[in-house]
Image 1: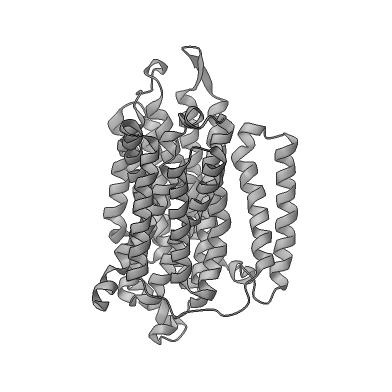
Image 2: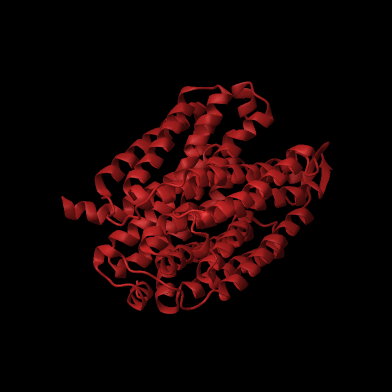
Length: 481
């Protein structure tokens, strides 16, 4: 039985990562109908997405640090439990206030991926670490590609609450599997949890992401948005000083400032921006009315199916990305991935009218994302002590989240300024979409440059469980994973 649980550790953790991505995307097909279904305004309904984003961004580094200190399995089960409870609440109510709180609870699942990656580093032999981490990183795209068409099918043919009953059942199943198959990691970093640091980071991130996500709605020069940006700057400055003075900080800023850690974080932010532009723009482009001259007028179900090949490709190519990292190093894999993302946008710019070319371009972007996302956690694992892997990967995921939020705001700003009237309603022009592709592709090239700037020999640490000593042997083990 113990051997079976050990063999199932990787697929169980991957299933949890897919669930996390599914939970984030299932609400998308509902958004146009939720004002009618809940009796709430469109602005209130938008908070069902914003609340998940904010909660995920705030809780990911906090839960990652808690996992390093109190046990990664324990915190992983807590995150999956919060996700499942949130889904159950959505299934039981139509009250917009309760729905927003429930979606915030589901945001805690964003910590599942960094916690799982840290568990894999602690538990697996070196020769299996690379492929397992690559698969875990790919679950973000796989779950998003699967969640959208499945949710659209449920919404189209059944009561919308059925979708949340289904995700509740899946969440409970994933929680039970994790409780049974995943054992607690012995790698801990004891100390007192930095509560003040957690509150400061939460407040600063909440101000930043709220301003970025609501700027288009409230107005970028409105007093509320400017006040949020100012508050973010003040709070994060005070938080930074507090972290440098704390003996056991929530985020080790001295470690994070090292090039081997800081540059992967910068690359994660840029890659998150470049990746998100693909799915965000593709979904709007193919659903645009045929009267625009470029739109295909596809349903949300058909839109999800257009993105599905990218998710399948990410699943199939995750072992390939691990082999490239083993042969050439994760730095090369990250640079290659971001370059492929940029080439995907070149295809999108060349032809965004034919469905088959749209699918090919989107899939190429997904291939690049697979390589980039699989390399980022490996770079972090090589550069930080074993006792800080969950918190450091949590920060890396946070940077990707911020990149996605900034991309969403930037794409919205571009499309708003490039519209034309179609049957009396303003619709983004094809030129606006192409500009969005140019912007995302340029960011991908900047991410490639950041990847190539990462030192080739970052400091690394061994995992105490295996008895490996610190230093070069751990580097060689991960290189050969």
